[in-house]
Length: 260
Image 1: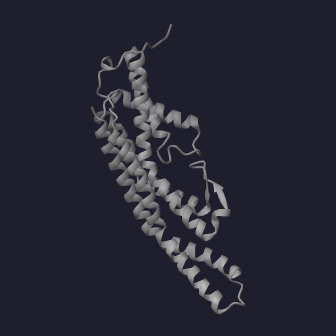
Image 2: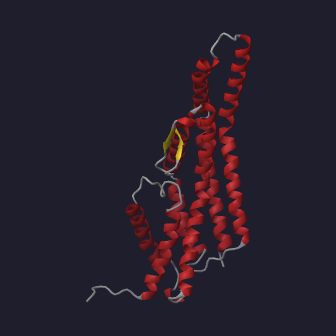
Image 3: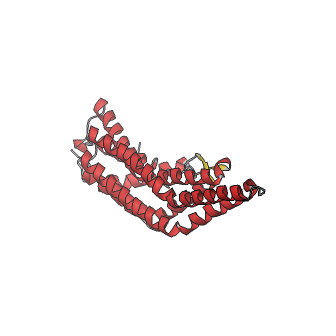
């Protein structure tokens, strides 16, 4: 005989809370890192769901009954969590795209490495900048703000009541476009510096044809790219912190648009 018997509506409420949290954990920066074992991610979601289930001010009896309606409620909660995490991860994706462009100009495209945070193959420079961005996310305490916001989402969008509309899809597309614009902004200074170096090498090759420009240009290009990247690191940190703040605002706006 079981020592504790939980009412079925409470179990349903827990399942819905858990799926929204897991959708967020599986797509948000740091939490979705492949360096974190799946069991740890599931355990984190389980623990947070236990806490939030007791805090959610919703009558379990108002939940959809077991069946097709409950299944669709589970899917909506999971999608809500996935989209919420995606609205944060665009910052990291923008960093990856921008630094990949810089790495290509520096000649680092042939020295790719597997980034354990995303599981993708990226240049060494992009891997370093991604880790720096995630360090800003952790040291700046942004992860606490996002977890607090996710907890508050259960007040903004009640369990099982999320509403999706075409306008939200347009918002997601705009977020992808914003990530591309951010990548260009982050990569602008190093790329312009490298372009000036290559113009100088081209002029040098014309004026001193005896010089082997390839031998001189390869280390010079790498050095100029690394120097330009190092110079803008303070602005990079400030900018990434600001972008994470913007992503938090976008996530809250998305929840409000999904509220019934």
